[in-house]
Amino acid sequence: MAPRCWRWWPWSSWTRTRLPPSRSIQNFGQHFSTQEQTPQICVVGSGPAGFYTAQHLLKHHSRAHVDIYEKQLVPFGLVRFGVAPDHPEVKSYGAEDHQALDIPGEELPGVFSARAFVGWYNGLPENRELAPDLSCDTAVILGQGNVALDVARILLTPPDHLEKTDITEAALGALRQSRVKTVWIVGRRGPLQVAFTIKELREMIQLPGTRPMLDPADFLGLQDRIKEAARPRKRLMELLLRTATEKPGVEEAARRASASRAWGLRFFRSPQQVLPSPDGRRAAGIRLAVTRLEGIGEATRAVPTGDVEDLPCGLVLSSIGYKSRPIDPSVPFDPKLGVVPNMEGRVVDVPGLYCSGWVKRGPTGVITTTMTDSFLTGQILLQDLKAGHLPSGPRPGSAFIKALLDSRGVWPVSFSDWEKLDAEEVSRGQASGKPREKLLDPQEMLRLLGH
Image (spheres, rainbow, N blue to C red):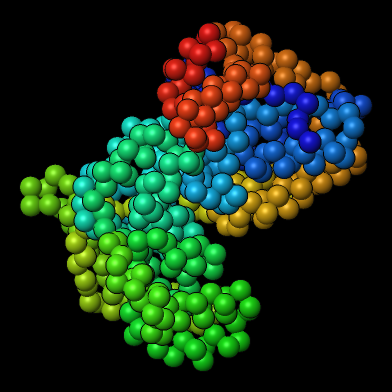
């Protein structure tokens, strides 16, 4: 069920007049004004958390009026911008920023966040000028989650396998010219602590034209330790173990022998410094601290042994985590955890303000997790509404926002405007057999809409 009223609030610098300096957080929750019979609800962020919350509210309150505001000129958040183009069924990102490495050399050309790299090949306007140099032989991805495997897969997938996806033409052209032959996926802990799932691992193992590189020594004693693991984790570990230690069959051995590209998992390594090229103008390698594990279970942590290892590479992609940003000084925010302090979605000390998605619980889970979480936020909001715990009396609602935008000369992009852009993208994609060719330039989008 779609919201009854759509209003995109383009907070970015390419609008005619820039709005206040506060920034939206992806999937920020609901701050609404309410009348007794017709609650007016504002959802900031048009990603899955925003949509699922709106869906729940509309389904369970027949008179609810929901407006969704979005800083981009197009809706859908991570569904559009955060997913590998060859995985249209998988939606697993949802925060506005990335965790910094905080190591020397991080600022060198050739070092990017995985979030920005994903935004580049998915057509996120703010990342369209990223232009990563793929002329190097080796890339290193720091982090061992699904995002890391997504990025590795895109780097190594034969470009002709991506031609019929909605990857941007600029990214596809760069990948056609890419010289990257080896991708190392590095984690500070061991095989038992990887964060990717078996589907993504299996796809990497079977990726055409590539072969896996796993050190059997990293898996010594693992067989006995996984016996008591939960079934999903046990199956993942068994696949890793087989890939690392068992001799492949004749057909698989022949496939690996003919592979021109390779990927590998490096465990017990923590980034210490990005190494510069001799002229100091770009990244040429990364220094990794060798680690060992201390503690057990969830308390396991990696500590340096004192040894280091230098790994040559020309591209470094950081995929060590995501975080949300504060929206406004008036809204509570925990910068350490990257969340809005809340109780079951109710923002602490701000009646009528709610949150959903990663800004509520932190950057964990996939789209089904967000769906359940958003439904719960919607349920809590409706409970508060029914109990009379929300600010009462008439409020201006969306009429106030419209008047504010008008006073500042801002022309919002409407849902009908989005439908025009959507039709244009689909039309452009049909010529090359793609589902769509995404528009990348906000100014071009506005021109097409006559703004």
